[in-house]
Image (tube, rainbow, N blue to C red; front, top):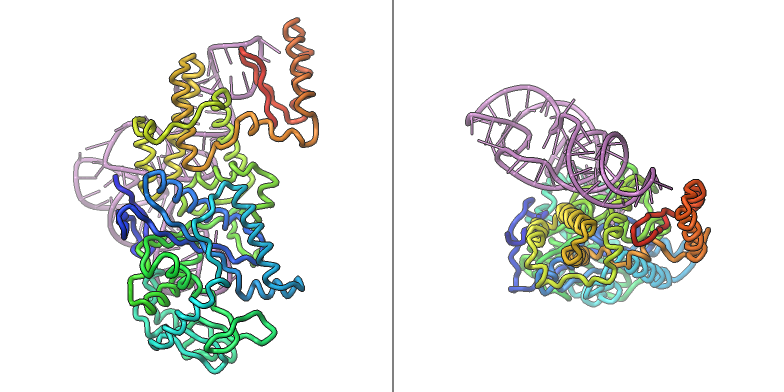
Length: 467
RNA sequence: GGCGCGGUAGCAGAGUGGUUAUGCAGCGGACUGCAACUCCGUUUACGCCGGUUCGAUUCCGACCCGCGCCUCCA
């Protein structure tokens, strides 16, 4: 089966056809850097990271751009609250985001354009829209997009422009011709952050930056545009209106949107204040646990962030590492080797079907079971082969990248016993076992368990891990 | 109100017009001094009502329920 992707625009899965053979140009809406990234951001970043990794594994030449919105009202307000220049805030938050990405194993995009570095491109596009009467400067100095000039408005989110008129809020002192019109350029006071433009001192509206930057880096028409679940309307709708009005070309072939993250079965939102930052979550769970949790659902399904679900993800990941523990030195199978494995064909089939990571994970568990059975039965060659296959499949997801011993034992710097003390106690216990002092042996095991140390006895010796 | 998505076993979560998803938890068994790890087996699963069909969880229609967007939010 060839690659199929669900397209928000057509509301269905279609076979993917690249604009240029073998190449995929992809743009994903990144974060507005006024605060630390939260798990909703993590989901989008991990989802598209997996998609890009998979596409590359299948031989596609992917150009992946993901922007940073580093000028906007929220940034200005937060910087003002903090009493710092907005550039200081954004520089700090960008660095923090990059740290979070590295922790989660998210590879950097090929291009990471920032709004403030594309002010000229933005101004050029706004000017084109004004010249073509798709935009106008209002009495308050703002430049607005003239919705009614764009007949296709609403095609992405399935909205009727007339309905939008009924629902549009009319603000006090409204300067727009039409309440549905949205800002391309916002006039600013002299003491506010801004840039000189043909319409005076000001700053870009939110939507125009993505139109300008995507066109600048990927061309007027490109293959895939992605983002979070709340972006189809109005953000992406507005992008389409801007770009297609400015270029006269079809803007994007496939629109992809990740599903929402809920927290304890409630909508996660800024206004409810129930969102978790990535760095908070990383203090509680191993980064791969978070990654595995995210990959264990389809990227478009809503997922629920909860203690139980993360614990379950950890249990699953523990099994994989447990199975690989005696195969730490095995290298992942090459793509050529993988191609001969029946399970890989099923893996590709699952992923080609709109990136069905859940199905693919189920196949990884199948491999794991066979691996454990082979290892138990002493079929060493087969076990090593399966370990290599498992590592290769996991590698496509950016999982199982750690040495299992390290995964289970951690840094050893945490509270409690250090590795040497633990191993000494295990030795004492094994001495007791040899002399059939099982009560004494169990006492030591319980003592270790109380400190979160779990023992596993094998013929070759006793393994331990920190829970 | 408008637009859209979904309701699958204790929980999480794929998928399919007829044949075991998978994981976690539970139970039984093997292994073990006992455990843990692992393997094997296992628990009335497909919201409700009609229709199409030899046969529907899977297609169609109605209904009930949940959720998302429509407002800053990924």
